[in-house]
Structures are given as structure tokens and as C-alpha cells.
Length: 415
Image 1 (cartoon, rainbow, N blue to C red):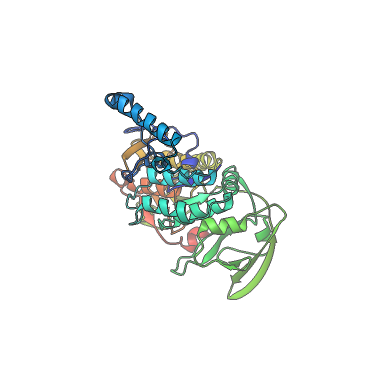
Image 2: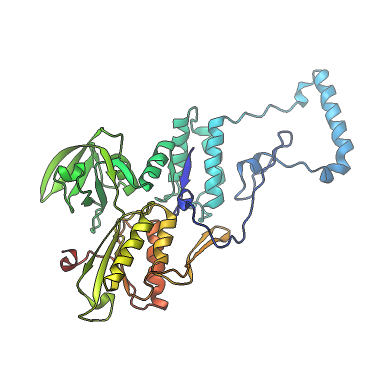
């Protein structure tokens, strides 16, 4: 099965249930090979709409005799050898082209920017069907990926079956790789840096540490790579090897690592002393809690609930929530994290180009909805973690001490 992902992946919605579905619509495609449209479809039409026209007996009732007469005339003309009256046969659509059309239609239907990055999405479809080779599945995947890249949107991409399976395995709580959590540095050069190595993993055993710069992976420079691409290159078959060029303490080292199964720890936390009035009124007796959410997988919700309950029981009166380099994961887990700190109101509204479709609300079960919260983000914060961040920072209307920080914690908090 081939999947496409958007800003919030529909495959990642899991079992979360929306409160309502307004303006819902259904699409029905009716095919008729005898009557083909001679004009381009209206914008947003499906491939079926652009190549066929529905026959309605009520609409054509008055012309039924004419149609029968025309059919008879065509049959007689064919019998008499008048081939000039016969229409040329339509070119058959292959299975691979149908797959491309399915991907095209998915983007056409759901993509919010209806200018499609200032290009004719319909014209692109016709050009690709005419000019791009689609003789096998790999060529079709290449054509789909190439068409999606014209949108210039890093969060719209094709997930081939192998990558989709790897994504699902990662959401289960374990992954086969080298045990590295990576992200972008704070500068403008988009360097890929080690956020933290997994305890006991291949990377930690090889001496990699937080702050190391990964210059290349298997000889390919990491400059310009997305976190998705870097993750794909670091993961692989269990027992396989990957070579990293690592810059550490102004020295360059080439490290060869063997991939193994790594258990992911999505949530970590600790109690800290008060360090700044940015996350609450100055109070020497107040306790500050730090919660790091590295990803949203199936374990995140329960682990985060346990963390906030423990910290509240220990007397935490303000929180720092760290979602830097959290590229997302399961969308429902992001919603559930927001529900732990918000008592009422909407968490997120999901809209497409037609307007609001789904709404996810707070459920009145917040663990701590009154404590001030500071949220740490960077350019590696994406998808479900963006949803959580935006909703938490919007608490200003009822919690004016919620703030958004884009820089690293001070050393006193990291200790």
C-alpha cells in the first residue's frame, strides 16, 4: 500500500475520534467509456471526472430516438467499410498510471494551497501521464515523488511501502538503527547534530555524544537533508552497517556502526530548582519541572501522564516542556499531551481547502491546567509537536504565563 503524508498525516490519526465532522462531503465517480469529455474539467476534478461523463436517462430521454438512430448509422457505416466515420480507439490507462492518478487525486482533493505552488495541477497531470515513464512500480514512485516536489512543501511526500512500514515500527516504540536522536543546530547552516544517543546503543558505545555534528552518512553530505531523510539513512536492516563522518570537539572521525533494535524512550523528566521568572512568578519555594517529549508514539501518552502525575505529586508548580527536534509521530498522542494541561476548549481544528472538517476538544481530565508552562521549540519541531505547542501557547488567554522559548536551556537547568 502506498501512502501520502501531509502536515498532519492522515495515517497517523490512529483511533482518536473527532467531535464532529462538518461540511463533510463524498465523491462519486461514474465512468462511461462511450461519452468522453472534450473540455478540461473544472478545477479540483478527479481523473475520472476529466475523462468521462455521466449518462442520465432522464436528461437524454428526449434524444433517445436520435441516439438509437446514430448508433444504427454507425453500425451500417462500419458494415459498408466507411472507416472514416469510426472514432479512434481510446488509449488504455495502465495499472501504474492509475496509481499515479490516485496520488494526484489525493493531493488535488486535500491540499490546502489551491494554487499548487502557482502552477496548473491539471496540466501537470497531463504532462506526467504523457511524458514520464511508468512502466514499473519504481518508475511510478519516481514520477509521484517528482510531481510532489513541484509543490516545494517539505511536509508533503510519498511514503513507499517499506518507508511506511518503518514509520509504523517506529511508532510502536522501537526501531532498528544506531541509537541516535538527531536534530538541527541552532545556526543557519542546517547542520545535523546529535541531540542525544540512546543509552547502551551502538552510537553511545562508539563514543558519540550530544552536540556532535554528523557531516555525512555513508558518504552523502547531510547539509540540506531533512530529518526524515536522515532518519531513513540511519535506519536499516538489523545487523547492517552505516558509516558516519562525525565532527566532535573540532576533530573529524569516521565511525562505522552496526544497526540493532533500539527501544525508544519518548518521555523523560526531572524536578529542577527555580531558575527564571519566565515560567512563573518569582518564588523561592516554587518547584520547576522539566519534561522532554522526544517523539509521539504509542508509549508517549501513558509515559507523559505518569510523568506529570509524578511531578505534580512532588510539588511541581511550573513546567518546562521540551519538544525541540520532535518531528511528530502519532497525531492523537499530541492531542492527548495537550489535554493533560488544558481543561476545556478546542485542542485543534483540522481543515482542508473546503473549511473545518474535524475538531478535537479537551475532555476535562487535565492533570495540571493551572501551572505556568514554557515550551521549548526549534526548527526540528514539526507536525504533532507543532499542534501541541501552538495550543499550549494559546493558553495566554487564560494562563498568561505560558511562553514560547526558541533557545537552549541554561546550564543550571541541564544539570
